[in-house]
Length: 277
Image (tube, rainbow, N blue to C red; front, side, top):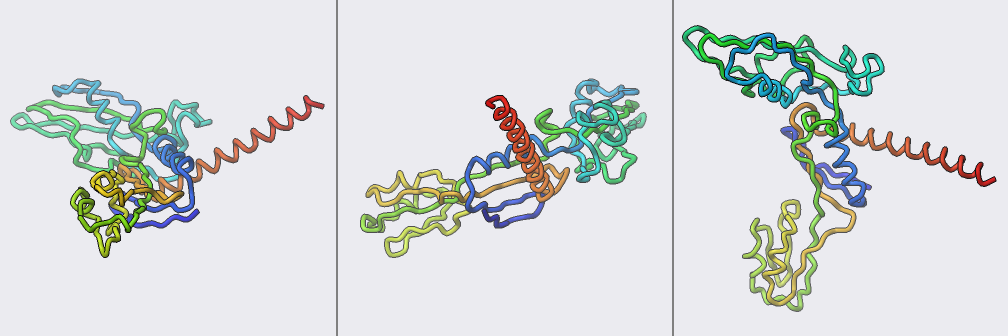
């Protein structure tokens, strides 16, 4: 199996997986979405809230604020042996928020008002709105960010987009081609060209395999297919960690699960053979 990175910037990673199969690629996708742990606000103590926004809505908005997550510094709260998921220094980080509008002004409470006692843990963006305060209104709260996984709640998933698709392949019977250009005109992305009755993709990475070109060909000359074992993978994170880090963590988790499965299989096989004797 080979991996070719074709884009890695702005929290977006795009690469080509060659010589694999959809079972493994989909396992990687699902692991990134649901297994890679991140920090997210779980518990909130509202000391004072005189804003028009209900306490539950404030808590919900804060829970969905993505927080930067240093890799390998925290334990997943539900798996923490030190506190049993109640929250401690090994699986959680406290944050505070105190905002108040003046007597003759309004104030928009933003994520920049969230303060953490760990400089490495902060909102990915400081411009996410939490509530709008009227004159004299105030919000004071304490929050606990805990380490969790996307399978527990979507707020812990590091991925915004995590998908894959087949690498496109043009299959053509050039003897039937008439240079009518119907396939070229039908392509919504304008990435097909015909040269001496040979159809080519000018940008294979952009092809969606929508088959509009295939249906447009009146002479049954063209068929879009895929390269067996090759996939285009796209990963975009919320900013809690870089896509490369999320990818590496997912592969580590997959390796660990495969090793656990192998060990369990050996134990079960040995037990079966002993009973058979």
